[in-house]
Length: 200
Ligand SMILES: Cc1cc2nc3c(=O)[nH]c(=O)nc-3n(C[C@H](O)[C@H](O)[C@H](O)COP(=O)(O)OP(=O)(O)OC[C@H]3O[C@@H](n4cnc5c(N)ncnc54)[C@H](O)[C@@H]3O)c2cc1C
Image (cartoon, rainbow, N blue to C red; front, side):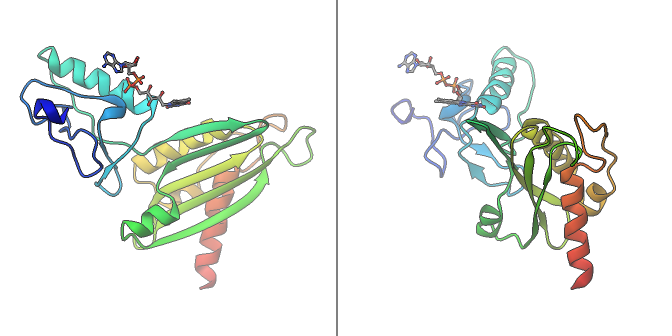
């Protein structure tokens, strides 16, 4: 890319604008070779995920074909499974928030993926990170025996819409013993954080 006169960003990946256009007019780039803008820090990040790649590709293709589309940035929602353990993340970790100069409040809550008494309920641990001043959710990490992906998706929507932990603590989630707890663990995590804030 550099040989072709295409500028790199501070992450040493190709720098593009929101239309996925490089510094060279009509040359577009997308996927693992470009740097993305983090939606919370507004800083360039390396986000080499298929989720970002396909969304960026659609935008680059639309613009290259004469249309208009933008890719606003990433929250870095990701999930994986190691043997019987699912691990997911979205937004900032406590460490990355602090590195970006954001003061945080956080909680790690342990519960069950279904009604406690129901056979097959598996352990789940939900960590929520919120901006201290606004109490807006800015990140979450979950580790559990099941059900991580859809909770990460729900928290991704919550972060994107600027939800506060107080709003999350009152969110309505579904319940049926074989599949869900009366209060989802992500809601219980938010309630735990609020209780702690009240005590201070
Ligand atoms: C093991 C693994 C697991 C992953 N799992 C996930 C996941 O679960 N979820 C997720 O969101 N992301 C996942 N990713 C990341 C995801 O695969 C990438 O972010 C995504 O494929 C990037 O798309 P891309 O088009 O930029 O690059 P690629 O998919 O790598 O495509 C680039 C293509 O260019 C070709 N190429 C390279 N050099 C040349 C050349 N000189 N001339 C012509 N062609 C060339 C390559 O052969 C390749 O086909 C995973 C990645 C790996 C490696």
